[in-house]
Amino acid sequence: MTEATKVASDGTAPLARVRDLSVVFPARRGKPPVTAVDRVSFDIEPGQTLGLVGQSGSGKTTTGRAVLQLQKAHSGSVRLLGEELIGMSSSRLRRMRRHMQFVLQNPYSSLHPRMTIAQTLAEPLRVHRSVPSSRIRERVEELLELVSMDPAVMHRYPHEFSGGQRQRIVIARALAVNPDFVVCDEPVSALDVRTQAQIVALLQSLQEKLGLSYLFIAHDLAIVREVAHNVAVMFGGRIVERGSVAQVYDDPQHPYTRMLLDAVPIPDPTIQRERLRAAPPDLDFAGPEEDGPCRFGEDHRRTGTAPFHVDGDGHGVSCRSWPLG
Ligand SMILES: Nc1ncnc2c1ncn2[C@@H]1O[C@H](COP(=O)(O)OP(=O)(O)OP(=O)(O)O)[C@@H](O)[C@H]1O
Ligand SMILES: [Mg+2]
Image 1 (cartoon, rainbow, N blue to C red):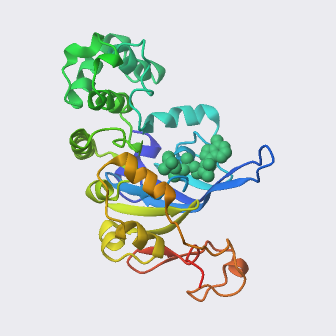
Image 2 (image 1 turned 120 degrees about the vertical axis):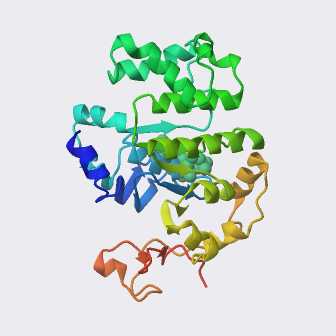
């Protein structure tokens, strides 16, 4: 057992601990720099799910990529299993990669069309040398069974499967190296409602069986309520509210959270996405950092603290990004 896994199994530290994470995309073609992620902080406990919600462009994917070190962070800290990932040497980071995996929205584009399922699932096993070559086939069978697929399909190609089956294969590939943490970025958005429910149930049962932690990014608030233990709401690169599912859904504090929850969910993911893209239509938001005390009486410019306030029960809310007036 490595030092890293000891920390987690003791239950003394969160599995993932993100502090003041920022990502800035540099100015390009006359456009100013974009702070896509602005001092984001959260913890994810072992075996738990943090849901990340917010409208299109709010910075959810960039946050997930920066946590996994697929996107360079401008500043902040990301600790996984007690180890700081930001600034880690590339050889150590390569070794940490087997602990953290990514499941993306579109299961077709994330599978190589000319690789069989067996080849797809064997690749990470070879890269991370997680099993001896003689055991690869056996492990591929195990992985397919884990996602409730018949191991006999291993010699087929991605186009021979439905969207839901392809997403099962993508999940199996992510699990090949026995990760502790999986970032699921809109894992069911491209699927029909019935298939969505099956994949959500699969992710939940895998979490129970394997003790996985998820960062679950989604537009669909109903799905997040179902799968997440905690939830964070993003707007304009910031987390404007976070807490347990009960705190955020039953007692939302930030006007943006309320607005999201007030909107009647539309089952069609495309329409829902379009609507969230358009929202909020008429909110005028306060500037990034104002002088003087915030609505909670703290002058963040003076103290240098993030404009975020967490109460004794762990329910946090931003004092910025409230509508003006
Ligand atoms: N490679 C990049 N270069 C410049 N800007 C980028 C880049 N990637 C993302 N952005 C910008 O960063 C912001 C956050 O984008 P991001 O993709 O993280 O949002 P999102 O919440 O995942 O949106 P969606 O719900 O549509 O997936 C957006 O303003 C986007 O235009
Ligand atoms: Mg995204």
